[in-house]
Image (tube, rainbow, N blue to C red; front, side, top):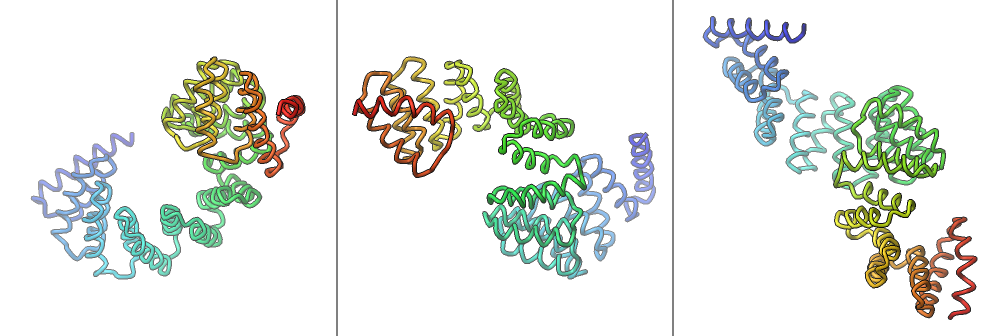
Length: 385
């Protein structure tokens, strides 16, 4: 029905424009709006430009010309049009906001910040707060972004998008309590907000409550079933529940959706190692290393896989590379010591184990599986040394 109504409107508009020989400003304006809704951006630009030529003092015509230029990615040209329109209305908050957005794309963050602040000075809007916060994030200024989003939430306490971004910022800064509070508020106002669901789910998942996290993810899956991050998190929930086949199935779906996401390759390698599928583990860990070559735990896992594939010389190189990247990872030294001990090199194994003990005590890690292994291996290596 809507498609039919649009067709009728387009036909009527064309007839009116032909009858008036393109001198009817309103018909050209309406045609431009319809063309933009039909994703005919270039055609809409031409219609708005024709309307602006008929009435160059119309602020609305200039706004729409600028909007079409922006959608075409011609940000400098759009900025020039908005500057021209600003002469007609210097304190128009929409114009100031749109100028700021164009300046962000042109990497002129200082002027963009000025425009957004002027727009907020005239009229406080969610969009201007959101763009100003995003700009601070692009600049790597998380503290500045946090201050902006806090102010935004004070003015718009029921905006789920602002609440979810603020919660995620707190999560990135390590304040999980405040993060969970704001993400929970976001889900209160919008139960299907996927950003909030993913953030809250990851916090719950980190605390080991996998069933509750999966319940949250089930809601997100109905909204964004093609999200690789969602399926990655679901897979690691199943991994935490020791349901490894289900975990690998979900992780492979995540890998299919985003084959160049190194975290998914890393998790698949870990899952295959746990299932003693060492060739598959080697495949995914190698892929992850190509995508993230400066992440030491990947080389440690590669060393474990190569050890089980009976390639001790390359396993040693993998462990040495892991140590070169990150010298204080105690688990690298422990796995390296085990590999050396099993290959008969007890003196070097004892040296690596001593480094493990040093860094393990500094970090005060308490893993039952690691403690059980240390209880068995420690006395043997101490005697060997």
